[in-house]
Image (cartoon, one colour):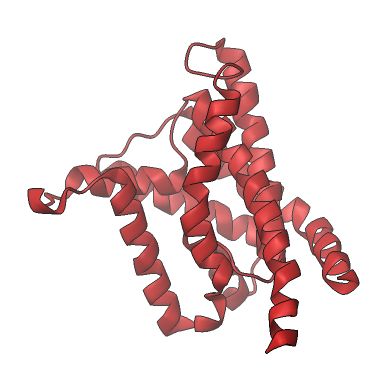
Length: 216
């Protein structure tokens, strides 16, 4: 029991580092205010299209959590080995980390910033998100439900993660748009950039995480 616990501590540390890096990127993306990421376009569309009972007091965040739980339920049927402690940590800690970086970056990038600066921060945010995401994936502690969709499909089909991530993001964005979600410049850049960038970072992150897990 003790050895098993000690094995998970470095994995969780790596996951938390990756999660923090990834959500720094997410915050830059959101603060640029040029459109939602593909998964949140889907959530936005579901939130707007479905006539939710008033008694449920449904919000965008609650729909996000509900879809995340639905993904987890599907994965429990398909292959439960993907559901780990990191999956739950990503769901619980993502929001507070974004809130923290939003406070820190509020004066650096916002909707009133020059357009070129917002685009630069958006692209930088996508790159940072991709790097942090690969650390989370290679931590062996699990990853967030929305990221797991591309991870599982990539593993099962033996296709490159970068390509699968683009396809999944486009599907999220298209479905969300058809349901009434808003697609912006940031949505398009995110869908085209995050997957290929993550594919570039994956070998480096695998070596980095492997070295850390071996030495601890």
